Every structure is written in structure tokens, then in C-alpha cells.
Length: 146
Image (cartoon, rainbow, N blue to C red; front, top):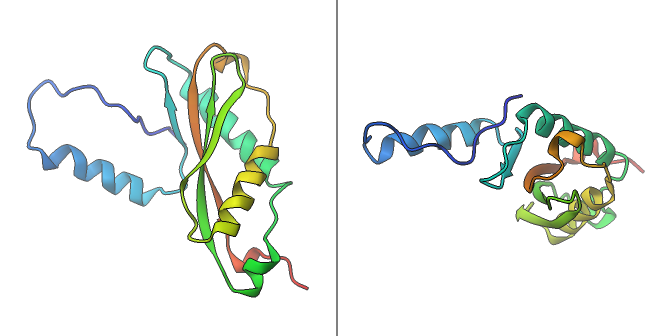
């Protein structure tokens, strides 16, 4: 999946104020779980490397995902968007919820899940600061039974 740019270059000709925002909003709504990445302005990472790194984190995180019993008992569902920010030295500099699932217990579990998903920063992304947003989806149909 191609990454959606977070910063766009200024258009060559002025456009009406509503024109540039409408397509961006439609794209964001149409692909809520698509890859989202941002990079420090001075860095120029390979979008393919960002996408592969993001998918690897998602794959590893799946091993640590738990559906809290209290959420299952109360029929709570939701998607928590977690932002991972990496420093130029490859270390995680922050991990935060950028969009709540609507339930604190699910948000905390999403942070725990992504925190445990350690994947070394690939060589193509080293020396650059960047962020990735990863959705953690809690759906009762995927909850363990019993």
C-alpha cells in the first residue's frame, strides 16, 4: 500500500480553500487503517521501507494482543490508533494513543501490545526521525471464547 504524504508541496497556482482539503479528508476516511507515516522534514526515507517496517511491527504485535476480559464482558469494541515515534538513533522516542477506541482499558491494552512488538529499525530508515501510526482493532467476533 502506498503511504499517504502528510506534508504536501504548495500548489503552483492558488486553488480554492475547500478543494485541497476535501480529497485528503475523503482519502483518510476511505482508508482508516492504511499506513500512516510522518518523517522529519530533513529526512527522506524510502516509503517502501516504512511500509514494510510498519507491517512487520503489526505482525509481531499480533503475538501480544490480548482482549481484556472486562471489555469482553461489557461488549466493548473499538480501534485505538497508536503512534510510534522513532529517533534518528533508531530508538522509540514515544508511543501514544492518537485516537481512542472509546474505552480506556482497550487503549491501555493497545499501548501494551505495540510496546511489546520490538522490531529493529531497518538500515534504510536509520539516521532519520519518523513516526508510524498503527491501528489496534478490538472486535468481539475476534475475541477468545470461554
